[in-house]
Structure formats: structure tokens, C-alpha cells
Length: 291
Image (tube, rainbow, N blue to C red):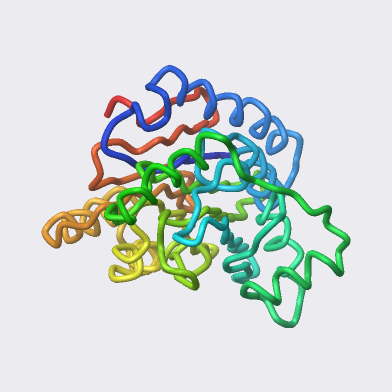
């Protein structure tokens, strides 16, 4: 099986939300260049996805890990999930603070009895694992929050939809999906995004999907699961994505998704203006930034 990899750094109204197409493409391609060789060397889909997500979390251009947006109380709370398609096991953390890479906590929970932990449980897990305390705040995100506080948080969300994600198919034919986010921005304390749910991140032995965009819209559509179920029921991946996004468009949803099927097909869809995604199809790298 020729390995395949697709990653995303969010969705938005304009390319300027990531500093322009050239800068966004550079960030995404750097991740592909580091991660795709791991798949060629025989690393598993899960290992590749975790590594890709960690690299994207470390890039302040995106709203996950370092560079995460602030909630209404000025705190950063992040969520991440991982789903191994071959074992069909889902794991994740919800509203965790002061860690550098939430995806690593989701990875550890893949083999745990309790596989999804929220705020206090996730923090306690980080302590048990002796994960160093880390502040993911950047000056840009702080300034964004300060400016919005002056207008009493009239915006529904921060000016960036930068949830990150990765989907991989390894040379043994195994699929995996991972997703990580800093949230919507300016939300109420305790708000839960889609990223640590099967609506936003889902994988089986048939197909794997990672989503980005307005979390409530993704939850309403059960987006990732809907696409995977359609492929499982016999639709090819492009048709499953096209049908799902046509339905979403009619309901005025705002989101995007990336996916890989077990036959090696790579796909994506969006209702937003821009989907910040890039892929390696086994031959060349490409992206969705101008399509």
C-alpha cells in the first residue's frame, strides 16, 4: 500500500487569517516534508498522525497548542482527539490547560480504560505523566482578546478558525485521524468543541476524517461520522464528501473536512471560503488553498 497523508490548519473567510496563501502553504508543506518520510519508512498511521498534529500544535499560525485562542475569561483551554481506524478506538482530552501538545495526552489514552478525559481529569493525567507545565499563549492571541474585551465580546468567535488535524494511511493499509484545537475563542467557560468527539474526528478500517470550522455546526451534522458511514455503506469517498457538503451548504454550515479511504483515495470538502489543507498522495504534494 502506498502511504497517503493529508493535514489541515483550519478553515476561514480569507487566506489572510493565516498570513496569506504563501505563508500557510509553507507551514503545511513543512509538516508534510517531515511526516511523510516516516510513513515511507514503515511508521504506523497513528505515529504519523500524532507527529503531524504535534508539529501543527507547535506552529503559532494555527489555533491549537501554541497560539490557541483565549476563552471569555482570558484562559486557554484546548481539546484534542485521536482515533485509530484498525482498532476503532477513540481517545481524547477536553478543555485541558498548560500543556504544549494535547495530542500526546490523547495518544496515551488510546490504551487506557478511561479514554476521554475533561479539564480536571486531563490536568491530573498530565501530572501523572510528568508533562512539563507550558503556557501556549502568544502576544497576538492576547492582544486579540484584549481588543475584544473592550467591546464586551460582541464577536461570536475569534477571527481565526485554525483547528488542526491529520489523516494518514500507512503501508499496511491502516488508517488514523487526529484533531486538535484551542476552541472557538471568547466562548463561555466549559464550552466543548467538536474536536474531541466523533463528530469532528473519526476513523475506521474503511475511512478516516478530521474536521475544522464552527464546532457547533460540525456537531449538528455529525460530520466525520456521516462521511465515514456513507463510505462504509458503499459510496466512494468523493461522492460521500460531495453529498455531505451539499446537505451542509443547504443548512448554511461553516466548516471543512479532510479524509482518506482505505483504497487510498484522498478527499476534502468545505463550506467556508478557504480550507487550509495540504496532502501527499504518494507522488507529489498538493494543497487546497486556491481551490
